[in-house]
Image (tube, rainbow, N blue to C red; front, top):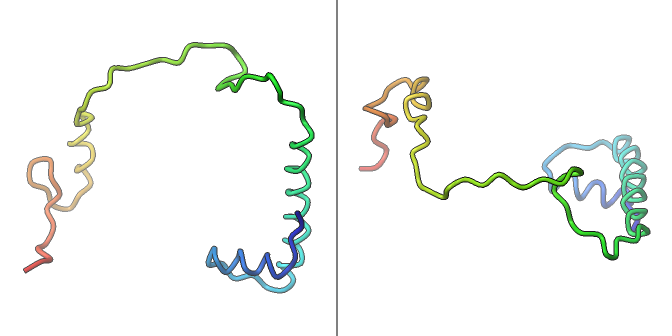
Length: 95
């Protein structure tokens, strides 16, 4: 896969960033280099390789699945200008 300046400008427009022609030319080369590295990954033979979450074998720590308030309500509203209990107090916006 290859990226041209038109594609770079289109991606920049979609990302809502301004790119000059000089930047687009530089980014074209950089993106093509990155895509070249990604294409090299397809050459690696991964048949029979198990997916892993870490380079060291370990058991994932489990916790009970229960609903809590996180015990952080007071910390969360501490910086609010106005509160009522552990709730934010805001002006009425709907009649």
